[in-house]
Amino acid sequence: MQSILNFLNKYWILLLIIAGGTGLRLFNLTKISLWHEEAFSALLIKYSWGEMLYRIGLDVHPPLYYMFLRVWHYVFGHSLFSLRAMSVAFGVGTIIIGYVFVKRFLGGTRAALITATLIAVNPFQVQYVTEARMYTMGAFFAVLAAYLLGLALQATKNYYITGSGLKPSRLKLFLYYLGFTLTGSALMYTHYYLLFTVAALGLYGILYLWITFKWNIKRYIWLVLSAVGMALLYVPWLNWFIYQYNQVGAGYWIPPMNIWSIPDTLYRITFNVGAPSKIVMALTTIFVVWFVWGFMKKIHQTEKWLTLGAFLAPFGGAFLFLIMAKLQGSDSSVYMVRYFIFAAPFLMIMLGLWIARIQISVLKTLALLVITGSFIFSIGYYWNEINVNERPGMAAIAKYLNANVEPEHKIYVGSNFEFFNYKYYNTHVYKQTNRPYLYTNGSLTKDMPHFAGTAILVDEELVLDFEESTQAGDTVWLIWTNGFGGTKPLVPTNWIQVDERAEADVRPYVGTWVAVTQYQVN
Image 1 (cartoon, one colour):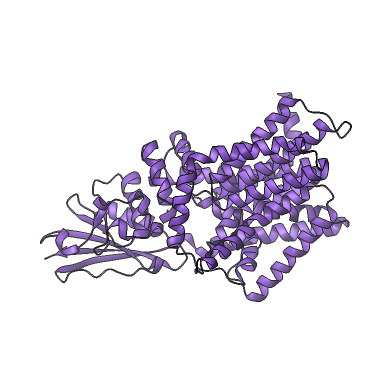
Image 2 (cartoon, one colour):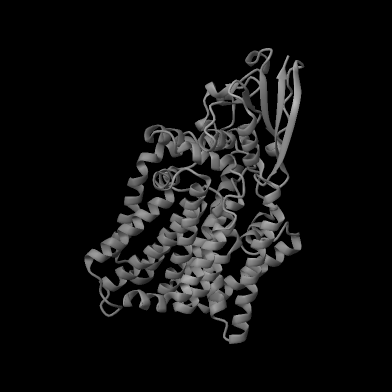
């Protein structure tokens, strides 16, 4: 009992920060309707292990997130809350590991608490826990890998240089590098943008060892073995990586990168209130450059370069994708704001250290209050702006259908991007016997782009022609959307509209509507 009291007395501020961050992440967790990409995750993990891994290979992402989510759902179930709760868990874990990283390497307890606070209330971090995707998991492992690399490198220095610090045992040195190897491999298996984070960590490791040991190459062996270990662990996925790379190169929906892409991303990572003007984006960029420069100037520990490198890595990857696309005659850069959640914790670390090093106490307190206050305001603004109670989307449509569809009725979905989320509600929430079918106007799965979810779509789920699939007397419910560039499908003239219901949705963007139209076939 005394040990528990001592722990609470020592860490009560951190525990309050964690509790607050957890509350922000759990708030309205299931209010936003499940959407296409999340539904892909939810349906994929219901296949057998072998089938699941095969179908992951047909997609464009590595497999680790889905493997974690599958194990998670064994324990916590397959509800929408459970699926998103894993993202919450990794989001909270990022608060903790961010605190540990700063306390160990950069600034002591006060700076670590400031950093934990910023990560806890960062609107960008909070927003993406409401998606059953790999984003918060990748952010967590990015900071954890940086932390373990820092431990490994310091242990290497203390092991080989007498007087540089407490000499670790050879076993501890091995375990640090093993931990870094496994977390680095986890990054590589979580998201392809994280390959650039791994590269940045490796480059930092080489520079650290060069500064410490110069040409004494034998001292590099532990880091080299870690790199070899990661490479060997990646070999089983290499063929699928090549396949997915070629598949993305063959066609992708992401718009090209432009001069405002990075300023917009920096704004989203920080203040994220509404649609910013160019002036606001420019001012945000100037502010970010200013405090990053201040961080680099005021912090003398070598690990500041580790932090900066991990932050810049995804941006460097975006430029590399852009260059590769240009060389292939394409404008696509595979640049999406959400991918920079992997950089966001490191930006919060630099911001936290910048605040912590403000010399005048009143200004330090004011800066912390203003920034955390703006973050919390941004979170409130986001929830108010999307007005989720008035935008129940597919969740409401599925509930309506569950109450009105009879066993002999037919359910068709007119958009690839609404098929999987309805299928999740239909099959796993309401457990309906009516199987939904996707209307494709004659197209088979082989004719569809990969981003339509073809990795988990089979031709047996398709309706190619309305007339051939129905007969007189049928009742048909047709789900359609204006999202993703969609429109209401044209139906045969002998289909008589009986009723129609539409619900506003939040994803993929506010302004999306999901509708269901009831027809009687004459």
